[in-house]
Image (cartoon, rainbow over all chains, first blue to last red; front, side):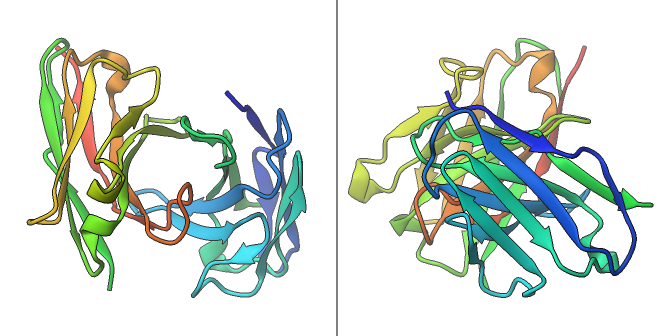
Length: 108
Length: 121
């Protein structure tokens, strides 16, 4: 199965900061990568699919990029509601589906 | 508005069984693959398994960690997906979410809030 790693973890940041999270796949997954935001007690939320496509309703401060094995999620100006844990997930060759270990964005 | 609501979680002894329910609304449930994803305390997300739509045979796939112990079924007339868990282990303790592929197969675009399962004696 494909392995995903994420960095950094955790990530300490302030409101207004530009935040970048990296996800690396153990093999080429083309653009078959998604990003999710997870908050305690809430339903996880899809942010980005196909590596760079913004899910409907997600603020434009979120963006994704990458292809092959290296991907990034960027938040251009961190808002108070963005403090959460972010997971990447691959869907290139399933099952199984693999999630990254998560990156917790907390208050600096 | 799409909604997925899980229920049926609780405290169960090791070796026992439990069935979780995912009630869907706001989309044509029968057309889509339904998944279960879990998150153990202090851990990340782990895909558990899915059931395809009847158009694709209604077949199921599972993670190796639950293969042979868990099964999934669906009732398209009531818009419900079930996760049947047998021979439960302490390491199955987690919040269990159902999630759908309505946009792209492989992308979990709608999720429920989850139902907690604790396996303990």
